[in-house]
Image (cartoon, rainbow, N blue to C red; front, top):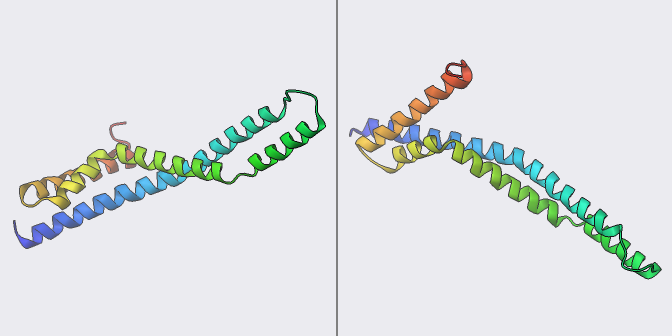
Length: 140
C-alpha cells in the first residue's frame, strides 16, 4: 500500500474515533446531570422517610435524628457519585450505539494494507449512512 493511501486511511480512522469519542463525551455529560439529580432525589427521599419516624418519644432522639438528617442532606459525595455514574453510563451507551464506527476506525488505525482500507471505507460508509438517514431522513 502506498504511503499516501496509508496516511489517508489513518486520517479517516482518527476522524472516526474522534467523532465517536466526542459523541460519547457529549452524551455522558448530558447523562451526568441526570445521574446527579437521580442520586440526590433518592438520597433526599430516604433521609426524609428516615426522619419521620422515631422508635420512642424522646427529645434527645429527635434532636439527634434532626442533626443526622441535616448531615446526610448536605453530603456532597452522593450526588457526585451519581454524576460520575451517569457520565459513564451515557458514554458507554454512546460507544455501544457507535460500535460499527469505533470498530471500523480501529481497523483503519491498527492495521495495514487491505484491512486498513476496509476500515477506512467502513468509516466513510457509516458517515454517509448517518448523513443520509439523520440529515435527509432517508430510510426512516
